[in-house]
Length: 169
Image 1 (cartoon, rainbow, N blue to C red):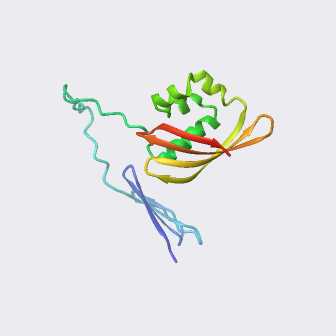
Image 2 (cartoon, one colour):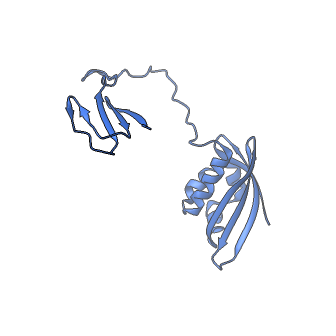
Image 3 (cartoon, rainbow, N blue to C red):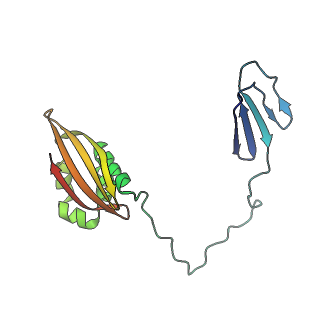
């Protein structure tokens, strides 16, 4: 059985099969070797690029800037990123995943960060998701060696956590 893969990059197409090895690019080729993959390089037309020294067309003067979109918006992805940032000590990034109203609810940033000082490791797993709300299970290893377990519901809107209800098990 022969498998073949084609890879096209920067005007070159690579074909790979499991029969033997051969390479060709602009007329050069290597002899096949037994039981090695075949690699064929075939030139293709160059990408559609403007000629050199062609000025770029500026946007219209009255064009509105594109609205910034959050990088992640899926509720589980946002909550997972939040706990990943906490786990890695990137508290400012985790804080940025909280909506302004959540930040106000949690109090000053410094107090929120201080709340994680006795946590050495955190793991979070998705239990379920319904619409913008994800239910998670959280395990937090403490500096004294104990482990705390939590269950929580997080609501996410436009890439930010807007509410959370977390209880210790």
